[in-house]
Length: 111
Length: 112
Image 1: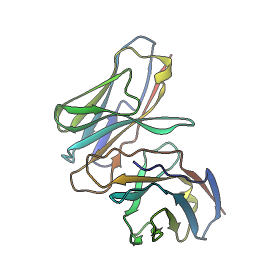
Image 2 (image 1 turned 30 degrees about the vertical axis):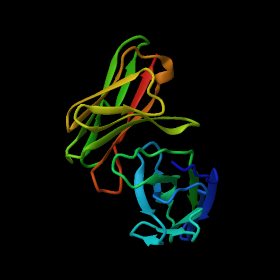
Image 3 (image 1 turned 45 degrees about the horizontal axis):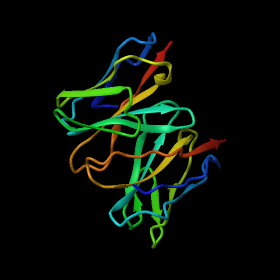
Image 4 (image 1 turned 45 degrees about the vertical axis):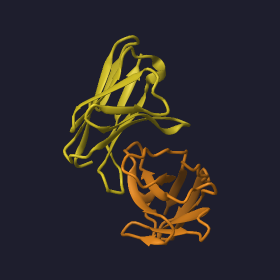
């Protein structure tokens, strides 16, 4: 699986958009970009994933560069409940694939 | 999370004793995983299963064994617990063809 690089921490004001970057320069053609988050000591929660097209769901948007070497997770209107560790993972979209977690980005949303 | 439960939620045990953690799912998913999480290391894969009686090792499998005799249960056993196995353990499930993994709420294990 491709290794990803994320900033260790970021801050965001409540109500503003949070843009979390991720570098995955060694990503291979069959690997998707997944985003998960972990709030306090709960289990990780799936947010979104994509291959090469931009994706949007009720939680977030995912922007992947054309060369697929980096991506950005966008939380359009961050709330205090979005304070969490966010993990960017590059992995094949096969059911048996185990996710390899890095250290993620700690996002702190403040009022 | 709905569909996946871990037990116990908390456990304190003594060094050298055997410990078994249970992951139970009601989703009939084929794939199940055990991770551990420690400060400074993020989540690391211990073992995973791709079906009944089919398991494989992950990144940090030493000192752990697993068993899956039924689709719904994936057991993680520490044969002789050590202090280095003090951690939070998470189970995850994934169905064939589905995209997201669902994680359990975790088991906090302390080995004294």
